[in-house]
Amino acid sequence: TTEIRLASRPTGWPSEENFDFATVENPPLGENQVRVRNEFISVDPYMRGRMSNARSYVAPYEVGERITGGAVGRVVESTSEELPEGSLVTHQHGWSDGIQADAKTFKKVPEIDGVPNSVRLHILGMTGMTAFVGLREIAGLKEGETVFISGAAGAVGTAAGQIAKLMGAKRVIGSAGSPEKVKLLTEKYGYDAAFNYKDGDVRGQLAEAAPEGIDVFYDNVGGEHLEAALAEFNDGGRAALCGAISSYNSTEAPAGPKNMSNMVTRGLKMQGFTLGNYLYAAGDFNEQMSQWFADGKIVYDETIVDGIENTVDAFVNMMKGANIGKMLVRI
Ligand code: NDP
Image (cartoon, rainbow, N blue to C red; front, side, top):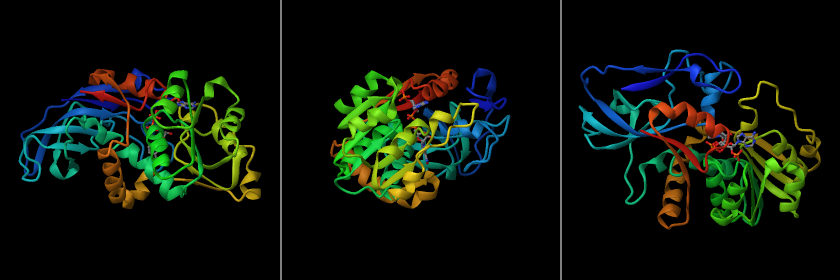
């Protein structure tokens, strides 16, 4: 099998030089092991954080180590009773075309007729659950509220907009980085208003889209978006800080928000979160999301790049906004 390893820690934007492609020879299967051929591997923004050695909520990747992360694949050889050949599984072994490991490091997932197995890496998986947890556990979204979502056309954002509506939000506003994405938000994802942050004046555009202010801010971006939300919050507003992608590849320190005093005067709450601390909500998420999904209430997009050799490109281009919905590599 072929796997991708971190060759050196990137400064600023990662490039091909920061990665090595290595060939792995697999020994015969041991007891309770499986060999899996990957169908899709996931490229995610948090991986950028793990390529640096700064303190974070997950340990950094070691130089020389495979880039681990989400993937979905099929068991092609097995000595495990629980995971016979042919089983569809998700796992965290990451950027490789296949993997051999202990059966307990894989999770068997059901297949859904007419639905690609890749949904287990986004809408019915990690990014979908992140959106759910952020709105329910962190922001405590209530019926009739106005929600603003930054990074709205990405994997988490497209899920968040739909979940907010299904949870009874009155008005959902999104921002994204191209006219095409903005159009999709209102036409496909049920957003009531959307704008292109690259047109500038994020605060002015938000104020226009939310004439009655916002109650909940679901932030994937940080920086100017957070600044704008702080200015447009209604009393008692809540921000769920999910990510700050505007600074992930920047070599300068991000500017701090100027409107922090509104936190006090308007009684705002702002809370960052990482999904790993909210895994108790997985049962609720799976139940609720599968139901919505089965009822045809959930749509999604995928941007698929073919071939493991294009993984680094897919990863970097995702952070530059080349994706609509979830960016994936098909093996
Ligand atoms: P996306 O599918 O949203 O892809 C990243 C998107 O970020 C791009 O498509 C691009 O869209 C946007 N972007 C890049 N640079 C900027 C910028 N400077 N300003 C505004 N937007 C920018 O990725 P995910 O859905 O996987 O992740 C979204 C966010 O959620 C990230 O911040 C990620 O770190 C976070 N996250 C947090 C988790 C948690 O547990 N807290 C779990 C999963 C994700 P555009 O064209 O609109 O610029």
